Length: 329
Image 1 (tube, rainbow, N blue to C red):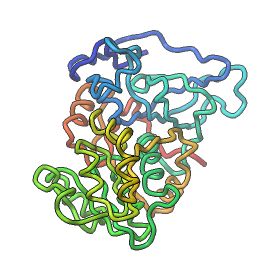
Image 2 (cartoon, rainbow, N blue to C red):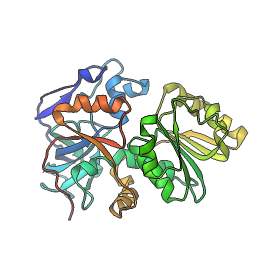
Image 3 (cartoon, one colour):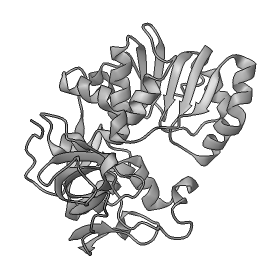
Image 4 (cartoon, rainbow, N blue to C red):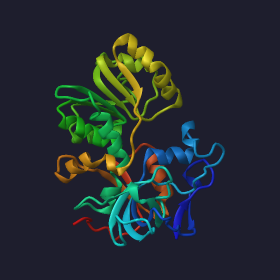
């Protein structure tokens, strides 16, 4: 089969589409013919080997050579212990624990798979898993957003941010969306009440405070983020620099204790079993999935480059097979 392979950390120039041996499913696995696989920040981080936590799978060289985790496709074969799926089923999954989605086929544990949501294409389904899990757990965690809450989403223009803005609006929040100037009109189109260009406007210094800050691109100090929170407010770090990550982990509880604010890292529970509430909202037309661009398997390097440059509005998807009819029944 064909797969997009890289063997050392670096730029998208390291990625080559080559022939590799097709995988064989183990007893508890399903072999899925990949139709679409969306690009996530985890892919570009693993490609570059930055931040350093992205090298947990290999300090000097990547241990896994095929990126891609949010897949949608069709079952080709099942292991002998699998009874929940059969060949021909349309499915989707998050395979971040093993990667391999930028290929013509991938093996997935049967308990990580779910039937593709009714009425969706493979492209639409592949855009959901990681982005939806982050948005749901960031916005709808216990004690989170309620009617009238002031919510800020930093890095709002990507996949998770697109969902988070819409979820916060549905929950009655006043939403401020932060990203680059090129995405501000897009963020307004999602319904954001206020937009900020992170290059020219520092939301931690403009005097406004928020009940919830969901930070998908954290690079400031923990004290700066505490300054942006209202009393009793909550800051959730999802992605960004190692320096900010460590500050939030080590200093967040101390700073929060003194100021009656909560600053922590969002430990996202990944997997399609966690995204059903958002899938239902999408199917009901209350939340929309935005796919910015699609790329062919041969163009995975360009897809990673486009995503890594921060130009994405919503999701970028690699389409491996073109027969992308709506799934489900």
